[in-house]
Image (tube, rainbow, N blue to C red; front, side, top):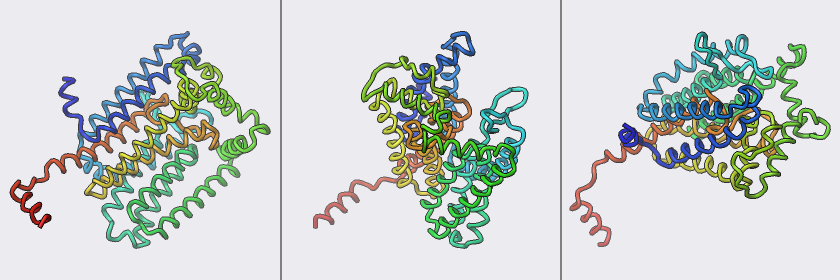
Length: 399
C-alpha cells in the first residue's frame, strides 16, 4: 500500500523534499516550544501536543497528496463559486466569529467544534479566481471596465473584509494579487490604479475602525504595534514579545545544536506560532535560521521554473500566486521575529503550530504540485523524433 502511494507521487520532487523537511522541523520545534503550554493545560503532558501536531501534519500531507492527483484545470470551475462563498463567510466571521485577542478571525463549525480562519479560505479563492480571470480574459484585459469588474472589485472586497480583523493577512493577499497581475502582463497603469484603490480602501477601513469604535478597535492595535516597533523603550509593554525574541536569538548565537533546550519558550508568548522562528534560532543558531530561509527561497526558485515550463496561463498564475503567498508570509514572519518589521501576528507556514492554516497551505501545495505533475506528463507524452531524422538534422548542422 505504501509502495503504491510512493509510486503515485508525482510533481516536482524538490518541492516534496522541501515539504518533508519543513514538516520534520515543525515537529521538533512545536514539541519544544509547547512545554509551558502543556504544563498549563494538560498537567505536563507534553506528548499530547506532539501527537496532536503530528496528526495535523500527517493529515496535511494526505491533503497535499490527494489534491496533487487532481487535474488543476478543475479548480478553474470552482474558483468563482469559492469566491462568492468567501464574501458571506468573511462577513459572518466579523460579526459572529470566535474572538481571540480582540480579533474575530475564526469560524466554529457546529457539532464538530472545529474552527478555521475564513481568511485562509478566502485567500485560496481570490488567488484562484484572479488567475482564472487573467487566463480567461487575456485578450480584453486592457479594457478598464473588464479590469474594474473582474479584477479590481473582487480584490478590494475580499482584502477589505479580511482587513477589519486581520491587517497582515489582507496585506499579504493584496501583494500576492499584485504579483499575479504583474506576471499576467496586466498593464502597469491598471496595476498602479489597483494599488491606489487598495490604499484608499485601507484608509477608509482604518478610519471606520478609529472613529466608530469606542476604544478605536483594531486601528489602535495597529498603531501601538508600529509605535512599539519604532520606539521600544517608550512602549515597553507592547515591546515585551520582541524583547523575549531578542533574548532567544542572542542565546542561539551563530551555531547551536540544542534541540528541545529552548528556555525562552517559557517567557515568549506564542513561541509555538507567531514567534517560532525565534525558538528555531535559539535552538539551532543563525545557521539554522538561514537554512530554513534558504528552503523557502529554494521553493520560490522551483516555482519560477514551474511557471517557465507551464504551457497554460491558468496553471502558471495559480501556482505562482499560491506559492508567493506562502513565501511572502514566511519572510514577513521572519522579519517580525528579528525586529525588521512590526509585530503582525502571522505564523510561519508549514512550521508553526496550527490546524486549519496548515491544511489550507497543504491544499495550496497540492495545487502547485498538480500543475507540476501536469507539466511532467505533458513532457513525457511528447512524441520523440525517430533516430534517422535526428541524425539527418545533425548532419545538416555540421554541413
